[in-house]
Image 1 (tube, rainbow, N blue to C red):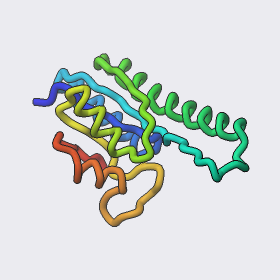
Image 2: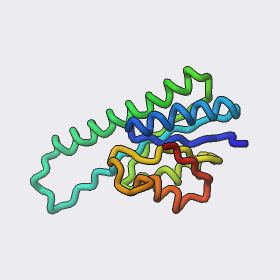
Image 3: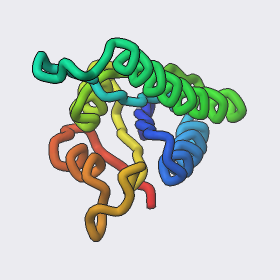
Image 4: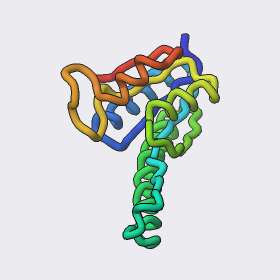
Length: 145
């Protein structure tokens, strides 16, 4: 039924569980997967003159290292299962926008993601980014609890 599944990750335990289930689903359907991890854009404004360049660079470096760990988890899970996989890092202050944009650009026919991410349980039912993807995506979304 589905041929191309997008698996977003923020590195949380729930996200890793969703990735494992997504890879398993992709394998059972002979689908391919695309993994995405989104890092903040790190916009600094002129009035933030007390933020030194080294701090800015170190912050970006730390975000990049986390994204690389997140994507490596997807790549490893896909490789172990024999599922074709490609991964992307995107920079956006609104992760849901990047998730939907990549899903559309890569012609994914399913977005499969965890119910909550690193920010913890903010709502009674769903995490804020998951809720936004559900609200704005034209592509089907499968939420993993």
